[in-house]
Length: 363
Ligand SMILES: Cc1cc2nc3c(=O)[nH]c(=O)nc-3n(C[C@H](O)[C@H](O)[C@H](O)COP(=O)(O)OP(=O)(O)OC[C@H]3O[C@@H](n4cnc5c(N)ncnc54)[C@H](O)[C@@H]3O)c2cc1C
Image (cartoon, rainbow, N blue to C red; front, side):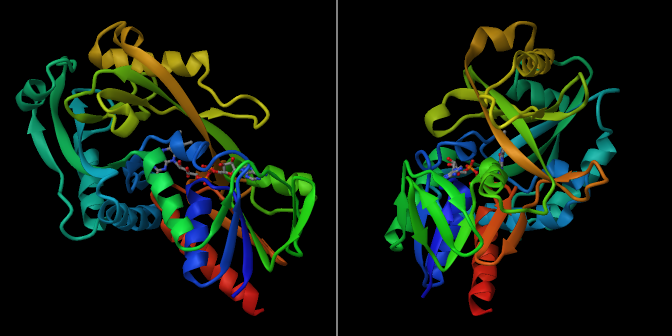
């Protein structure tokens, strides 16, 4: 049994700590604020394979995430649900119907057996289900099913399970320095561990930098923002923004957002020292995209709140401007650092961290 520190109690830190505790290690989690108070409670709240990642050829990520989607729904049915989503097709706008059909067929094929398959709704059926949706040029919509969660509640549930496994979570315990020999500093005190796992999310690289530990990953920090509107849509929607054809979601909220609509997301560069909140330009972008489908001024008149989170995107190669949402793990001496990842795949990431830890402890 080894003594292992995990830095960060977002979903990735909690699920890595869980896998380490299940492997029989003595685990202590250091969290500078409260568990689940950062990125992990500011997501789009989808347990999904990520239909749009098929466009970038990330099939392996989609396959893995679709299996993990089912895992979360089986483990925590009280905090998750299947969510049917409509993907409307408008004449002469956005991606071609055939291309969408191909993508959804592949998405069905990559999903575990028994998951509902996509099908087509004619325009009349769409409009009787969603009378407020713009009818102009509407050809019909594909219905497909993904998973949805109450991210904050599900993350807290995972943290409670971790504590039940015997791990300790130290809240309000910022780690100010780590080294590759298993030593970390928290509240001015040095602590020695057999291994340290740095899962500080968007701050993981900053912690290494301020500790003088080098890293290989080339990261970009990207903010994603959401609008929360009063009134839930009759159906979840995946729409294409008229400004640039990027996809965005309009989802019925659950948990603390029940009875509301969640609209997002955006992609904007973020500096870690700046506050993580929606900019005027992002708010305008989302409101314009929403109003295109639901009528001028509708987003503003229903606005309840906004929220934003940051994801570290790992550049696949320093020369190419290509980013991936897959995680990247680095290890040096007695230190493992994780960059990136998705909420949906936090469990499999945790297992990978535990496997890497097992190898490092043997060496
Ligand atoms: C806008 C947006 C929407 C998303 N939507 C989805 C989605 O719908 N589905 C999906 O699967 N994924 C989604 N993701 C991805 C997913 O939310 C993230 O991958 C995941 O939440 C990251 O979790 P994390 O634990 O790595 O980071 P975080 O949740 O940010 O946790 C890191 C923790 O480390 C702590 N910390 C930082 N520095 C220190 C330190 N020095 N000492 C101690 N603690 C420290 C922080 O306080 C924080 O609690 C989305 C991401 C974004 C940004």
